[in-house]
Length: 101
Image (tube, rainbow, N blue to C red):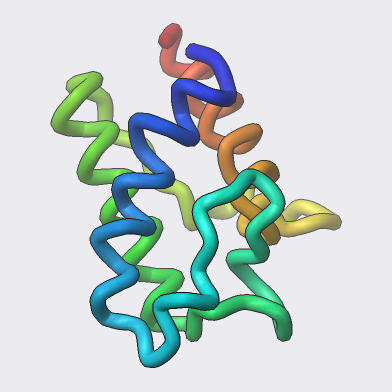
């Protein structure tokens, strides 16, 4: 699965769903460089958890595979895979490859 497939099929739909719950939805731009984690993010910690759960759910529904995004592998990295849409998509592609997808 390509990075753009992951962005368009899983990340953007999950962000769209989350957008309605944000205080400032206009700050959440659907673009690869959009910051998801950190001081420049439109998401707070609960929004981030909701986003990750939403992505995991979409992946499970569409691909019939269960992955956990906030796992030991993600937390032990020097650079968080949750920094941006782009870095999150790279991480998801990596996890799906480990599952043979």
